[in-house]
Image (cartoon, rainbow, N blue to C red; front, side, top):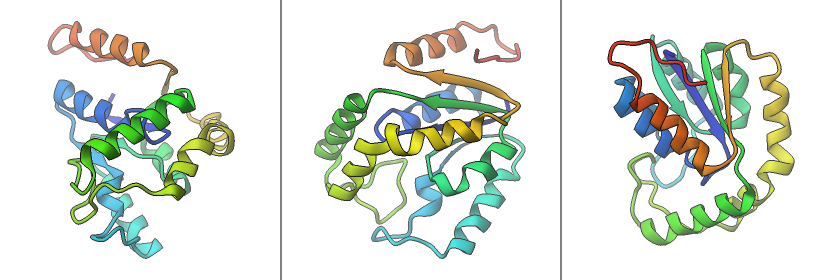
Amino acid sequence: MRRVLILGCSGAGKSTLARRLGEMTGLPVVHLDQLYWRPGWVEPEREQWLSSLARALQCDAWIMDGHFGSSISMRLEAADTVILFDFPTTICIRRVLTRVLRSLGKTRPDMANGCPERFDWEFMRFVWSFRKQRLPHVMKKLESFRGELIVLRKPREVRDLLLRLQSAPAGESIRLA
């Protein structure tokens, strides 16, 4: 496990898991929201975004979280492990709303500078429709992935994964599944 890609709907816990895995493994964490967004929620030019992403993917080791569907194929080619959150929509909606209420007007640690938390109806529609409209495309791309795939469907499964990692002997190669 040297290049871990964490995918799934917003609000599932991708960034939180990435931080925890980074702390536990010592691998550097790359939050795609930090790489992508410019201050004021400005989107970069496509070539600039893909160039930044390509540089990050060239590193020997990383834990990378974020959906960004248009670049999934590129990231899958570089990853050796994929953790996919397939949580119920209600959990993701609740978590996004909680995050907005707790962080409104503040920039989260996993977000780009100058992008304070805000409520956005378009984003909420994205979260609401993720499992029906976007997840099938992700699953199709994962069919050709040759690395280790872990699908987490419940918060308890995330806790169990972290417990397994915590109990692994020091210096032992960590397998997630």
